[in-house]
Image (cartoon, rainbow, N blue to C red):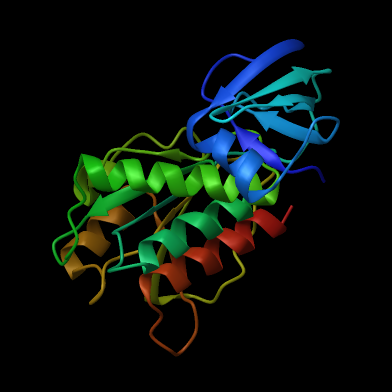
Length: 233
């Protein structure tokens, strides 16, 4: 696979000039030169093979040679909601959810939440999504949603989608994945959902799913359920 670069504007066959961080990555980090090939994407689901035409000091000129639409997305919606874990564990969570094909990540605000992300933090998470997409070959970006209170998020209409709530008292991992249904995964904060939050989820159609006899961290539980959903069809 050719080196991949993200451009936040509309792309089409023809000349394109890359500047800023991606130009630096292309010319100084990857050391691509005229005649070399690269792959551009902008999150629209397609990728754009291109050839380097000229490398300047602060810009790189390329010629986009076509449009391709490889099928690398899941055939259903996979949305994961969880409070942000501390430190670089949040970056790890977002990167791996991107690799697994999750459609969206929703930072949850629960009674026992510790991290309450602000706009700057959400922008960092979006950059992590882009970097992970460059690595894994995704051409559609996982959406990082605005933080949502659990009570509001859990009560949203389900439209026939499956809803899995990670909880020690739930049935073992292995729920039947229904064809054509989207999947929503919810994981609680360190210390877990409160009893009231669990009951609220069950009242709105969330199925309790156990993940074994050990207590898992936020990112471990979220990735375990996301991987199960992604690989079960």
